[in-house]
Image: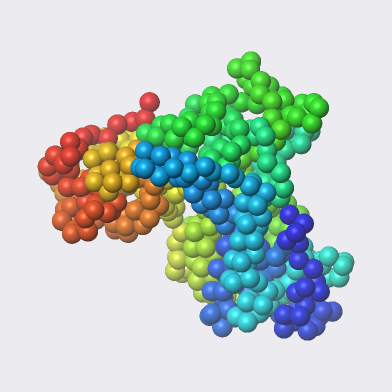
Length: 512
């Protein structure tokens, strides 16, 4: 992480702030320069507001430095290696040699490319945003002090404050006393892990376990729950489990780590089922915890929930009427696109609130933008990808009983998947009748799960349809080019009206 620490000198050459000893007035102060903070700062500046963006690291946040950019760069290289190894049945044979240090060096270089192009101090200064490097803390409800690395302090008078504090990796207690990697520090590796244990079977754990296995590492994935991807469709999790095992990942489900000891340069993990596993490297991918300490939230009157998240209402306003919270510090859904959207919505509301005097904030109903996670797309970038939006089958069955109807179309019946030799996976559409006559009322699309090599791209066509609760007839009658992966969406929708490729609609069922 130290590679991305910002210094005051590094920022000063791009700063328009020129009164270091004064309390500097800003319309908007954004604390945190990750996806949510960048979106908020840019939205405020586009609205003509004087905006300060504060972070102790270089802008970009978790996404650029530790999450989306490095992980997807690694996954893409791993896919190339896997494709080369498995192309024999297609008549293409190759010997694959992976230089993992070189792979990781390219990952680090790609981060710098993204940073320089879109998020650097130069770019932000050109957009009119004042960037301050340092630790931010409330001195009073409306004054944020920024302490730079050299100890100097600058005070910002903030009309409105956007908290985009982000989150940090959680480390289970047994791992605290032994050497381990996190999803932040794994990118600093300079050697190949000979025996890698990944703790966590969520999206990040699955992605990194598959990537390192495909790049030639021996990988064990340990997950305490009974299945992978606990928040997503169980059928999708089964497909991914098969894919991980096909790539050589030793998946251990339903076992937690009870103890960890360091011995002779290795780490030995004792599991709840009585077995143990030895690793040269342990990668903890067990979720993230909000970074809400040390900011003086109590001084501003900002409450924090028991789970560590900043307490917000549906408009993203905290318990302090001039303070708003977005991204990983305000929601357990740790996605870049979530933080980005929240950042822009919070600014819309903050601009309205700023028109009121400080002693009389507007009521929530006067604020225009509501935040909802109901239609947020989720994508796991494994191979195959797992993508989901809206209601899953279990949620639909619990909410609507047998009135909820489901179609599952296997990719094995889709010609493009056959051509690609990638027939694992499926499209699952979840529909609910619109109206009181359950079986006769028109069915409206309320959720979708796609498992395919291009699932994330396919889901983009379904998100607006789910959000609008579109009728299935519209999707079923849309002309789609042949042979594309997207044709699977039309086929699944048509199966609500007649059998298509062996698929037909059925009642939704609760998960076991």
